[in-house]
Image (cartoon, rainbow, N blue to C red; front, side, top):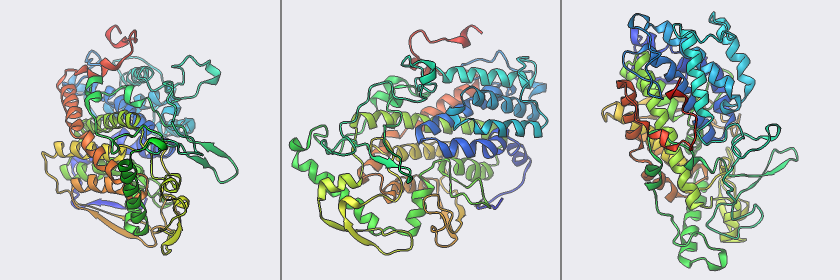
Length: 518
């Protein structure tokens, strides 16, 4: 595999060997989940999948730690200190990840990864058919942890099995909306100029389909370090004074605001540089980007890069330290997404699209990006399209800006506010997912000098991509400040052996609290 990202200071230490033995981060994720979960899921579902893998790993690993308890606050399966070995930790995690994946394959990108996982287990000398629940063994610990994590996943309000609304089993659609969200606009008419408009997409082979809002219920389903009341209190003001009205009742000042924001998007498009295109793609997927045949695992996106390539080697984490960091980071990321989705549904903002531009500017022409290696071209405003696909959910606030703020704040908590962790990587020529073989035009070196710069570039990249108006970016950051601290506090309590059960306040009445009786 071609090594593309290198932290500026790396030494092979015993901690490095311990950390890089981790089944979760260094074996199962790159070999199996990178190719299914990271590539195949819409962002909110991807974040959920990564979180539950982290929970499964944690719920197994904690039984081989002196004080840590699982996500349910239990320590009754904890093994004696002499069994707290690297091998036992990894075997337990190996089985736990497999069982949670096996229980709901579509939650992790599809069943196509299951044969790969079974093959990986056999290559490591383990039997994927071993369903032992002997809690004196690492296999039994892992099987139990994976099963219990999957049971939690079934009650989290995400409709992951498509059964919440009572749909007959043969007709269930995982992650289908059950809250009756109906967009104000259709793909063919923008009657409400400030409200989200689903687009008509196609596969290039004659099949057309209308966007449905992705997981519009996510903001009211579950968070783990925040109570429902804490999520509800987090708000950012809409850019529009009367954002829910039809065009005929729109305030002139709101139209002026929308036009100003739209012109800024078009101007950024006109001036788009290749480095900005790189950032747009790098930060589009928070887990991975830029794959090549020589580098099938790709470059780490913001979350994976900071965790595995920047901080882990720089701070010389061992396996336990990396596991603890990973849990907090994934909770912070997920809870920030939940908070952003709550606001997205409340504001229900329109995105910068060709339809929006046509409504605002009619037949007026603008100079915009002309394609890879080409000069800007002058086109009708309504013919404009963003650099990358327009996401199928409301625009305001930016979920990316929100999540990246949480990721970086969590990192800074764990570095005691040390910010200077420079990281260099090379984006190979032609490795773009969106414009393969065309972008970048040459091998391109990138250096991100501080953790804070990761968050800044992540936010700005959404403007480069053409998928957000500028006010949404700052709003996303403002909305999610402090969520990382809540995630860290939950993690610290779990490590110390206690449970901050805020997440249990989200559970529906009558939920099976199996962890209290089994």
